[in-house]
View 1 (tube, rainbow, N blue to C red):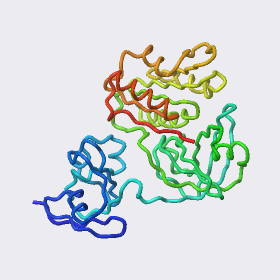
View 2: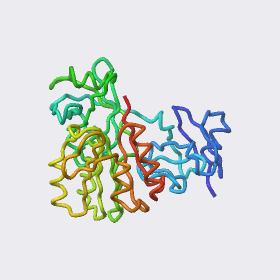
View 3: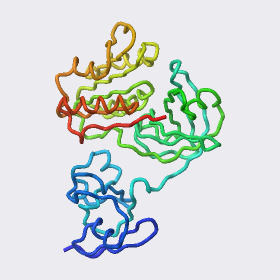
Length: 326
């Protein structure tokens, strides 16, 4: 029989009675908690454990990347010990100072920004980090560096220039090597999950969203991923493609890897698909049942491909995404 436990939330201690879930305990003590189905389906009551791993039964139906970050569903969590917990938006945020060491122009709209951090970040390639300048102007950007590089403290992100995007305009127009920045708040579900090396992977990025997928691809290859790996890069014009030669070189060494650049609005060069990523996926693949799907880019493009992936057989649990907003 479960014993009474203590829950530490936002600096306050709450008791959790025997045979009571975390959700029931918090609601009983008048904590304002989001919830709906109470049956570990709707995902409304997701929380994070800050002092270890939550009970496995509290992570049923959750994506593997969320499990790896010690997230759990409060409606299904019967504590086995005292827990320090937080809502995702209230999780502890660590700030790290960094210096800009490289600025590499990848095309007319995408800049590769490389920073050297004073303290290494704990991250997985593809997760997003908030970058801020001295005036606290900032933006969440996916990390393009492989997870194996996190001990070096040297990380890269791809910054797409977006009209009206204050941070991206500042990076492209004013940022210089040697400038200081602050990095904080690494989070996100978009990263490679080891232990599923047999499973086919579908990666699709639009414009600068390619950077996150390159980090995930490197993680997969470093983990000797044996299943098929398909990388789709969507752009409006062929001039916006980048890393084409480098990615094609990967295909020469790894026979399970396929690269499909997709150009929508002008004639595509040899080896490119003319049309959208959704069209290319339908044309190149019979289905996505039992595939893992990674999507990174503008909300409209990601949502379109998410719907298409679902119609092609992918389960929602196997679709991971990162929205790149202004």
